[in-house]
Length: 374
Image 1 (cartoon, rainbow, N blue to C red):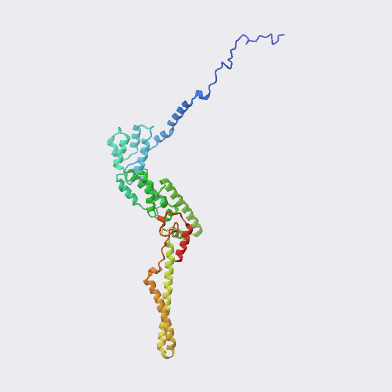
Image 2: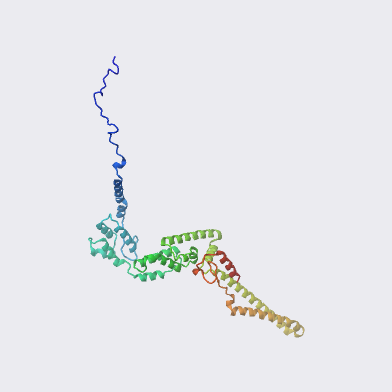
């Protein structure tokens, strides 16, 4: 019986050369296969070949014809020009493709303007030709004067009015009527000057922000936030007070003359007092006439008693007539006193528009109470 020792091992005759740790080659790590600079080049290549420029280059520019009024689906020249500017900045599109895209977006008579250039002209040559025919030709100073003369229209929201001012100011900046660095300053000044909602200007303290004016997006966000807050409050007032009372209350609170709602009760009281005096005078005249008739009928018996009554009624009548005549001859005596203090800080001798002090609501309320008493 053979044992394991007697069986020959087939691998004994084969010399296996297994490398040791000292002679074994090391394994390749990730950094050796893909070095960082190679990875950076690959990533940049992927970013440059991203689908965003190609997807934009394949997008269609909206049509423009130059006709007024423009048809449905067309845009104005400024909007069309903006789309073409973005196309010209796309480096992934060749000039011939840009020209083709521009020609595809034009309709007659705008297409007839660029036909003499042919297809071999540069895209910028097409824009120059169209700018001369449909671009803004007004002088920058005239555009800036138009901007300064623009006021809020009836029923126009303050945010919409601000957007209209921004459009006019952008045209003036484009034509050199005003520098772009001062656009925010002039925009805020004209808005405060042309917006009729004085309570909005005071509530947002826009007059005090003139030295450091906000940008157009910041100012627009402030106005839209305030408009939304007022609209929500108006809805709550309608639900609580009713539509008519809420509208009257808002008109009295948000009207520009701050003390105008106070003048109405004073005028009403004046008319009520005059009416009472005239009524009393009429009654006294009737009584005097009756006494005079009675005195003529019985001078001997009733004359002694009627003369004191007549003299008393005459005196009272003359006094009341004098009061009425004084009121009619001096209407300024019933004119409510004008405020002598600042509505912001409560100080005397200046107004809120020129106030440089901190707001003092307590002092303003105290002087408002004194004004109402006067």
